[in-house]
Amino acid sequence: MNDSMVNDLFEIKNDLNQVVDYVKNMKDKKNIFNTSFVETRQHLYDIYNDRLGMSFYLGNHFEGHREVVERMRNSDLENVRLSLIDGEKKSCSIFSSEDYSIILGMIFYDN
Image 1 (cartoon, helix red, strand yellow):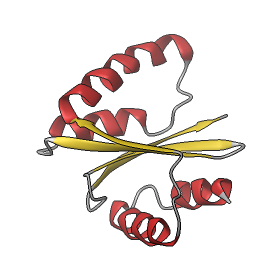
Image 2 (cartoon, rainbow, N blue to C red):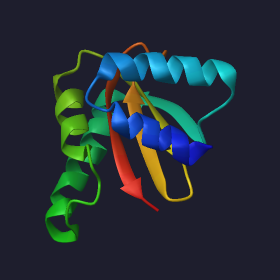
Image 3 (tube, rainbow, N blue to C red):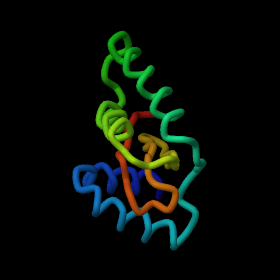
């Protein structure tokens, strides 16, 4: 089930309003996240911005990483919720407002 959700999110990743609707609909049906927590935007930005430098050495295996960092840098949110959907083949990290009304972006990666 989680793999199909990750694939669905990958298909709509460029329409963040559609992602908001999808996430809200799915989370109302069941607990879809393996992990979900709130942290300050600045803290998450610092961590994921530092990891961008690693992508130079490791290759770009994390689709959406650069976009998430850019949106966090330009966001007015004080706190960001980081939620993980862990599938068997692919996983997805979602960066959003605390109530999922704003999606900053998603990072997709193969397991």
